Amino acid sequence: MTRVLGTAAKVDLRNLLFNLGVQALREQGWTVERAAGLGKSSVRRISKAGEKPLLVSIRTTQDTAIAFPREKDDKSWVTLSDVDYVLAVSVDDAYNPRFAQAHMIPGKEMRDRFDRAYAARRKAGHSIPLGRGVWVSLYTPDSNETPTHVGGGAGLAHAPIKRVPLDSPGLDRTPHWQPANGGSPGLPNSPVIETGGQESGISISEAKRLLGIHLGIDPSQIKITVEA
Image 1 (spheres, rainbow, N blue to C red):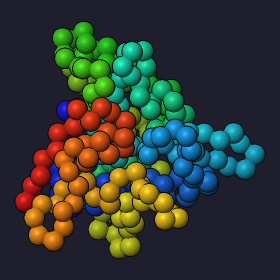
Image 2 (cartoon, rainbow, N blue to C red):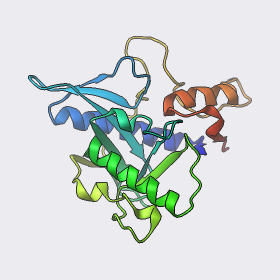
Image 3 (cartoon, rainbow, N blue to C red):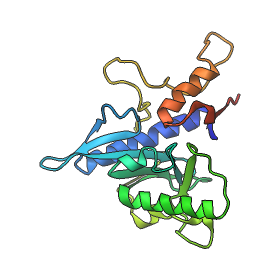
Image 4 (cartoon, rainbow, N blue to C red):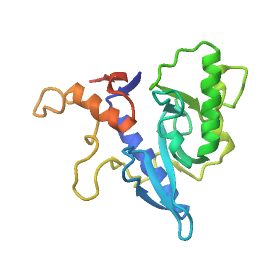
């Protein structure tokens, strides 16, 4: 299951990482726009003058691994099969993070890594329900000796296009799903569920529905843990 921890710090860091990815693309000379019609909030259309527009999926991680789920027909990957690049934005260390760093990885290469990771885990007898994310490490070297290491190391193979200390002043923590022109956001400003006090917040079922849209998975696969 996708486990969503309702802590403001994690939400804040996720926003920071996503916005850093957008900034990194712009610093590389790309115009970054929402990919209208795809319904996937992580996907952006990027373009440069005189070049064909490309689709990129911006994936953030606080544990140095990224995930994509299989489609229900088990023939392709949700989102990953549709994009030209994956921009993986990660902390440098899962336990003692000091830096945020963005890696630009060709979609074809990432699909190969995930295909091999999926095949290796299935061969080893791992249970991977369709629609559930398959996690691949960015910094654990690719190795056929351990099924969970197969496909890893994309962050080692592709040097960061941007790397900044997490304590740098002025980092943008605005929720990336917040509409720019006053429209309805795809998600509330934070997935934290409020209980009691003056704020009624939203129901657990509604939060799961919205998160399912945001993550591209079935709401029944989402587990929400509310922490005081």
